[in-house]
Image (cartoon, rainbow, N blue to C red; front, side, top):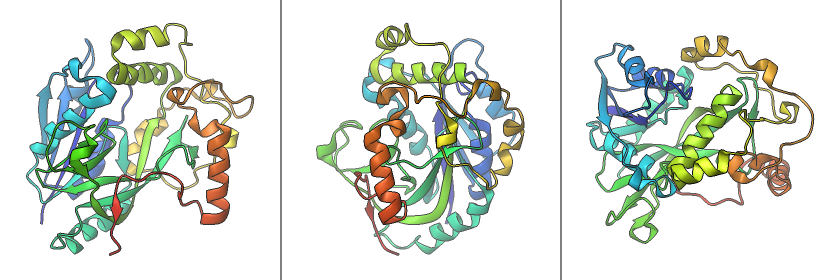
Length: 316
């Protein structure tokens, strides 16, 4: 039984993605790590930084993003599939460039892959998610954000990246990541492990720049330019005192990055909640989601029960 890991990235260095830490966190589990690295903007050193890890298991696939496929983030799904198709393992562990695995979960992930290796009814593994916000000390638990997602799949040609690369589906006929009529949800079991998501932990000016880049992938560069022309140069994370405080340990591979945090003076603990749309990243501040989160926390132990799920859970 072999495990491959795969990912994709573009401008990861200049946009403050912990892609090196992400790769290093998965290497103890896998015999190869395949990553599609898109040609970045001038001065970006993403490819060089990945190569500097110096591990022969890392395989870099150089790509050029075709922005004609920017519709709703389809280019992200295509880049994910490019890396997935090059994997040779039985199980394929997927980490986005801002997702990291704590070393304490590595034995559990391997054990689940071994336990379910010959169970064809299970097509993927479902991971819990911890979403950090603003710094490494705060995170959010909210109905507005997914708390579980598929991050390990079988190496089957019918399984493709879904929507803008958040998840996966089984395609009876592949016509693109948004063609739901030709797909079905994967049958998955819980991995008994957690993914640490650091996508919202950046210096405020880089957070705003990353949000604009993401908007360009989903709506096109011209629309992104127009929407961000009047926005502040720095992202406002809002009052952090409203969020839970993280008291556990971070993955060991994150130590240097955490020690280098230098934007604490730009964060705030109190004050008004930011105003903005869901696209600004403030969904968890909206009354609707705060109400649903409270109900789920009080009545269901924090388990999300009212949201949609892109998987079929197999009890095993």
